View 1 (tube, rainbow, N blue to C red):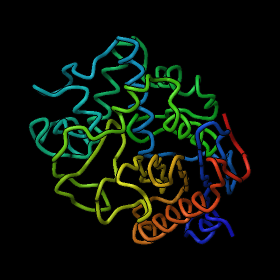
View 2 (cartoon, rainbow, N blue to C red):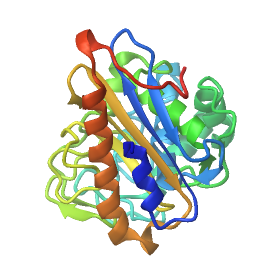
View 3 (tube, one colour):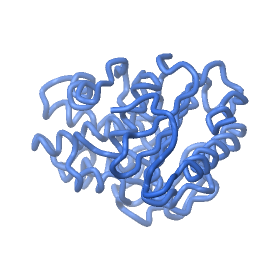
Length: 297
């Protein structure tokens, strides 16, 4: 039995999952389970993809993270870090920027609109040209809100996870800033999981830090980052859980999180811990990894 076999017990109609291990100087080891080409709505995993596109726009020089967007004193950086003061849904602010961590679909939509205006094209087109096409994500498409309406496959989502591990579209400095804490010390809620005095986020990704409870596992390091989605989807990357190698996990389902939240918050950490344990056990001498490469780049 492998770690990914655990998803066979999940109470969902369809599930596709992958574990990823990347060690210096080696080919990524990607093991998949389930149909890698089934199309899923990624739900809020769309947010890291949207943020990555926004950061491509920053590096192209058409926008800046300090651009004013939305209410007074709010910037693109605030919006990507859920610190813009906007509610879960809607674009009428409920707080001043930088005061609370308020998880906001509307804030992400405002950020995407700003990029689209600067690029002179619909955001769906910019996302495709800036992220999907160069990464070979040919089965991925934005079909609505950039906060939750990307449709994709396991194969394509793995390609994005590999980009998070070893960035090719962003400079190392920009990529590192995206997955580091932004506006630290803000109290906030991870919807469906818990309330935290310091609800740590990067740009478009949630950072595990010391949050308890959490949807990742007890073996994940405090620097693990990623996102889960309301369609019962998850993606995390951990650069510190296993010595000298990166580990990531993707699991896509098509059952709304709200319908199985209690089960998900038990089963997702189990899967995460099993993936990390398997990656640790598979590590060979001198940084070698044993395993099967089923996807790669």
